[in-house]
Amino acid sequence: MLKKFIEQHHPDYLRVKVLPKSAKNEVVDILDDDTIKIRIKAVPEKGKANKELISFLSKELDLPKEKVQIISGKSDQLKLIKIV
Image 1 (cartoon, rainbow, N blue to C red):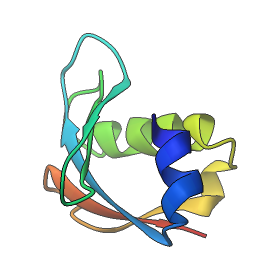
Image 2: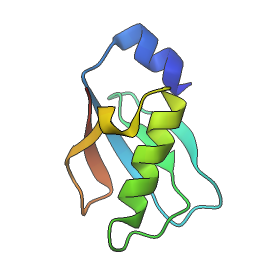
Image 3: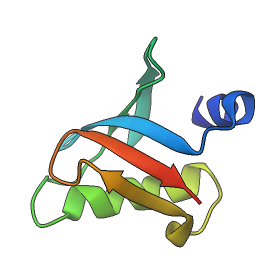
C-alpha cells in the first residue's frame, strides 16, 4: 500500500499519523488528505517510537535509514517525514 502510494505520488514529504503501543508495525490506511496512518509497536518515550517509525519506513521503502527524516512532530502523533 505504501510503496504504491509513493510510486503514484512521488512525494518529497509524507504526513504520518503514528499509533504507538500497537501489536505490530503496519500501515493501517491512507486518508483522503494523504495522511498515512501507521501502527508502531514501540512506546512513545525517549524517541523509541520515532526510531521504530524510521526503521519501519526505511524497510517499507527500501531506503537506508539516513534517507528518512522526521522534520516536525517528534513529540506528536502527527509527523512530517522527509524522504531524501
